[in-house]
Image 1 (cartoon, rainbow over the protein chains, first blue to last red):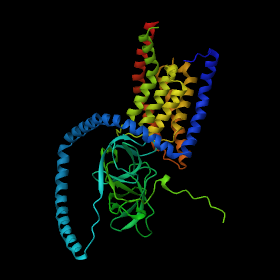
Image 2: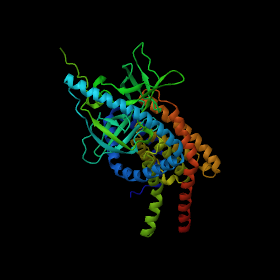
Image 3: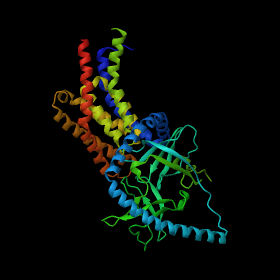
Length: 287
Length: 170
């Protein structure tokens, strides 16, 4: 250890705070200038910590399941009544679905319909909160050898969750549909009107930019649209809810506050490219 | 000084920083409350700056801020800056804060946390160039202010244990 005289050491100690504040400002500017460097640093750290988080996740999940167990025991009676009612309703729907499926198969045979290829998917566990106060994202443990790419679509067992925005060696980050930077082209079923689903860091994203003359009605189903080539058409997203103020919001099917396992689908779409893949405008030569 | 004693004092010197790193990493485990990483970093830096400033020097605070930014996906550097300012304020007031009653310490922390929350919101607005919603900031302040007594209780137990060990050596 280097031995410094006491006054020098005191002066250094007094200087370090203002100097480091300046360094922090510099880091902020650097982070703005080179977003890719920061992203890489983040994913290296996430890769290193993912095994720890995956291990800690086990007891957390156990506790959460225990709490849910107690809750379900508490509400057993009312839950049972609700499920019986729902079962009756679903039976009617099942009959309708079977009839429609038969009719659909018949019509497809007549039209020599080319079916969509079944998409490949991988399943990954949510191990950490990849967001923060002003962002909604989750971090997935993907295992060392994976073929997850940016832009893949994440779904939970009920519906659309978000898109993969950053990929590390053994982890990946999924930006949730509720994040303030999330924009998803959707179709409002029923009216077939296109709209944008815009996140706002709240539980329910808002609907914007629907065509004139169409009003999203309360209870309309919302599915993804193939517009812009970022998502396949028809993934279940949620239902329209009108607020007291008249704004149209989407109540997501996915349970974003209790995500544990996500399916990442590879639809082979590269509609919206990540920032670093976008070609910078070439400096124009003299003509 | 013997080797064991040196190891002992070394462990005490790095404990506050190491425990804060541990808390930061654990706070990233999803439990349904977003922004917990920041809510853990600010009170930890505040507490250790007041009661053990030697173990929480500015370079350590800056490194904790970087870790917080990398974990929490906030603009890199903003967390470091906020923590350094929290550290600076706590250092200025530490002669009074270390002797003040717990209630006064809590109130002072609430003021510091409110300032940190406002600064965080401001940086988010400036660096993202859009107006972020204010409610998550308020929720963060609520978590920080409400969680401080519990965290301070645990940390002060550790601080007292270390102090007893130091007194015994003297």
